[in-house]
Length: 401
Image: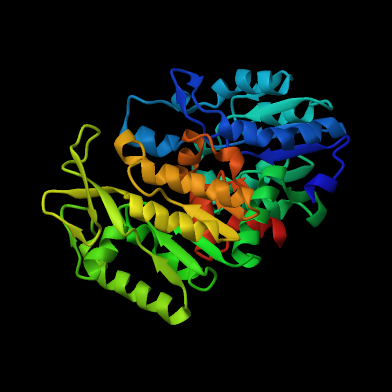
C-alpha cells in the first residue's frame, strides 16, 4: 500500500493524468495536476525521486485530421514551470519518454528530484498496450505507482501493461487512485441504505449500463436531464420538442419494469422548465413533464421536481451523482442542477456518504462552490462511469493481480 511504503532511495515511476486544458501555452485548469501533488510529495518526503509520465490529448489522431498541427502542439512542456512552482522543486524535462535522454536523466536523479517525460501518446504503442514499449518505460523506475484514475479504464502500456514488469510489492496505487478506488467501492459494494443514484445527462443510451447495474445496488434512482424525456415519451407523455431517443423507448419501458420488479424507486421530474429554443436568451415557461406543449422543450427540472428530489436525497445515507439535471451552463436553466447539488451537500452534512463523478457533475459542484461540501469528487469521468457499469478496469486489475 502506497501510504505505508518507504520510498527512501527509490525512484518512483508515477503514471499521472496531466491531460489538462492549455490555451496559448498557459494551463487554464490545473485541477488534475494539484490532485497528483500529495502522491509526489510523499515520495520526495521519504527521500525518493520521481519520474512522471502522462498523456496529453490525442496527438497522432489529431495531426492526421489537421495537418497544420505538429507534435510540439501536444507537448507537456507547459506543465514544467507550473508544476515546479506548485512543488517548490525545479522539475526536469525529457523531450521523449523512452529515449536515451529519458533513461540518462532518470538514472541521474537524486533524492528529492523530479523528472517529467514528454507525452506518452507521441508513440502509437502507448494506446495499443505494446509490451516492448511498456518494458522500456518500466526501466525508468524502481517502483511503479499508478495515480491516474481518469485513464484506469484504458488497457494502455503505461496504465496496465507496465505493471507486469514490477513485482507485487513494487507496484501500487498512488494516494489519488487509492482514494478514488476506496470511494467507488464504498458506494458500489458497501453502501448504507437508502442508497440514491442521481443519473442525468442527455441520452439514455449513454447511461443504460450504469442504470441496469445500479438496479441491483440502489434503493432509489433519480433521473434528470434530457434523458428523462425519453422515459416520458415511452409512457405516452407529450414532450413537445424535448430531446428524445425514439429508438430507445422500449428500453426505457424495460428499465422501468425491471426497477419495479426489483423494488427500486425510479424518480422522474414531475415538472420541467421549458424553452422555445436551445439558447441562453430563449423565452421560458414551465409545465408538467408529461404535458409539454408543441414548440417547447424541457431544459431543466421544475420547482415541484426540485422539492421531490430534495426530499428523496434528505433521507439517503449513500448518494452517487452522475450527470446534471438540465443545461446548467445557461443561467436560466441552472436552478435544478444547483438545487440538487445543494441537496447532496445538505445530505453530506447530515452524515450521508456522497460521491460526485462525471465531468458535468464535477463541473457543477465546482461552479456552485460545493466541491468541499460532498464526501468525494472523482477525477475520472469515463473510468468512474465504467466502474459503476460493473466493468473491471484494466488499470485497477493490473495492480491488484
